[in-house]
Length: 438
Image (tube, rainbow, N blue to C red; front, top):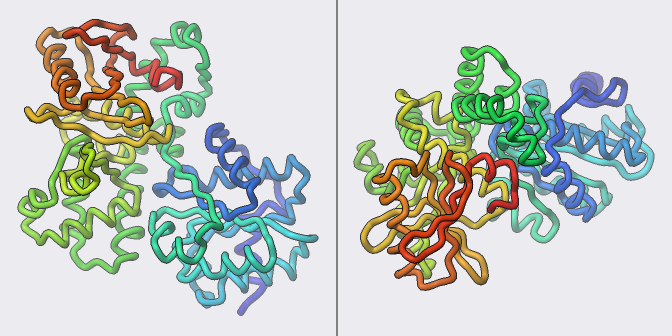
């Protein structure tokens, strides 16, 4: 082992001898990371590639240093660095630690941050050893939900807490543009500018680096490079797939047709392949966080899993870069954005279909009530209004529960009466910028 070479790589990624970089704060995640890190359990930060996990670790380094932790007591390891490939993978983590101890000589317990840890086989055993024998604080990030597979759960059961990271919310997007909206008055004073930014947010999504790029062609090229990297590195290479074409075509279909319901059998026929292949490939896409799914609501858990799933893109920019007619996608993109925001807020989300086949975009179940949410561009058209609202009447009959009925639109926020029911109309900016609306 070339210890000098190993240290050179580590020194490139750490801040022992150089200042920490300027970064944007993502307040919601920073607070959650700080809170869960205080438990001293292993902290797992997971999410799609390029969603900002590494930057969250840098922000956590800043917080630790501000609380008196010596910067030399923090070891950051970027396991995406190709230079690590020349070293023995089986002993890499232990070799890194030993070189760090020899060259930096931290005092007492130290912090270990493993970035994109899924690149190292058997990493969980090494982490468990560090956790149990040395009581070091450990942070782990990864771009594959295999991190929380059965193997991971059994190895580290009861010893970790996890955080799921998404691309930027619209509120975070505005802060990356140096716009802070905390009150309705601030929104109204800046609404023309905010609506312009929202159009870009719909079109290009919320990957942090993409948001900071001004050139439109470069934005598109960057998003496409993310897509290729996710498919090739997080799926094809990881699962040793030979049929890239089917995977790519399936991925493009699901991403470009976001916010739609699809049955595995139908997809099998569309792509002239086996049910098991479709099932496996969708699982791989979900594991890589490129698509997300929700089940149809039913009081029977068995029926929930048996019914077709509804598919969403992790980012509308990814969806749009693979689509042809964006003008026809506004409705599905708005629904996708609402879905992602509900996910960020930790809601348990389903879709619902009435016995007459009418679809409700989202059903959120609480202990004592159910929220039904429709997403529509506008209710100004009479026929659209009837179509969007009549589904509530049917659902009310069938669910026989304490219901709150909501439509999220580009219209103004208000309450209306329809078929003896009170329905809340929520403007999408109120929903995205002010958490108290849902």
